Every structure is written in structure tokens, then in C-alpha cells.
Length: 158
Length: 66
Image (cartoon, rainbow over all chains, first blue to last red; front, top):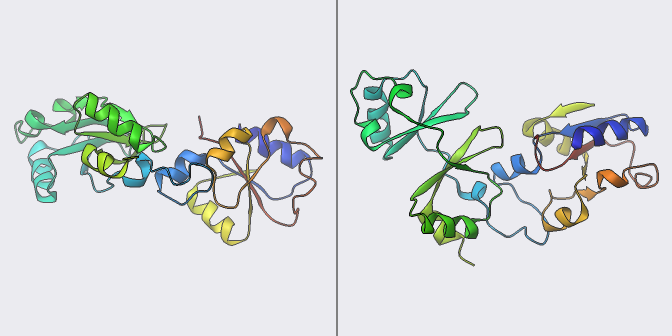
């Protein structure tokens, strides 16, 4: 939609027209201020934890495990060079043979949510499905962070 | 027309760029970027843009890139 709007403005004679193509979702992914009737409504992008450990598909599990433990996490997200989430390592995957590659043992395609999702809605869904955390990504799959249900329940209460 | 990401947007806002959200009014009312004005795409024309300062950079946006 915004590319068409930018072209329209150019035809109307505006000389310096820019298209912020990533749009509102990108803005929310940074947890930035906003205005409007629901400006105060907390969203997933506001509290997603950016420090969730990540690794490359080719990384060895032994190295990843050490890094995850040192960071105090119990999971790691497998991302490509563009930070697109490919999979997740936790539990038995993180306990696999130290020489195994992340892509060989990861859970592929973990469920994700967008940074604009309301925390109150998310907290309810996570509780109903007994899910402790969920991955937050941009629409194109790039990682924003990991949302913990405890955080969502604490900060999303209405 | 140039496509920008957040870092370039930040610089443009520092240059006093004008933000224009082109989503429908209901979505704008719900939430928008600080200082943005709303001109829905379907209404974008000479009359609705007449009040915009043409000496300022204009940045349009909608929901996402998809």
C-alpha cells in the first residue's frame, strides 16, 4: 500500500518522498512510542527479550550449549544470516551430541507471533495452551525476540 | 521515491520530515506513529494533500511490507 502512496505523492509534485516500507510493525518491533486510542496497550514487541541466544544452522551443539547455559537461558533460536528464525533448540536438542549441528537436531519452524500483538490476548493464549514462551518475529520471519508468558501475564493484565 | 528502514527514518524525522499514514482512518485512530497525519490511500489526491508542506521530506507508511 505505501509504495503506491509514495508514487502517487510523486505524481502530485512532492519532490522528496520516502516509503517507510516496514511500517507500523517495524516501529512496534523497536518498542517505540506511539499515539492513538490504543497507544498505551502493551504489545509483544514492547517486552520481547532481545537477549535470547541465537546460533547459526551449522553451529555445533556443544558450543551452543555452553553459550546458552552461560547466558542463563534454556533455549536457543537458530537463525540465518538475515536473522530469519529457522528453528529452536531446547531440552533434548540442547543435550544432543556435542558435534551435532544445530540444523540436525533443531525443532524446525517454531510458532511465532508478530510484535503488534496485544499482550493481554497473547497471555491468554499462552496460558490456555500451557506454553511458557513464544518467538516474536517480523512478518518476514526476522527475529525480534522471545516473549515469556510470565512477562506477558505480568505486563499484559488489563 | 526511496524506500527506507528505521535508521533512515530516524534521520528523516530529525530533518523534520512529515509522516503520512495511508491506512484507513480506523486503524490510524487505534495507533499511529507520533506526529503522523492520516491520508488514506483511497483519498490521496491533490485536495487532501494541499495542506502538506512541500518543502519538507514526506515519509509514507502503512502496516508492514507484505
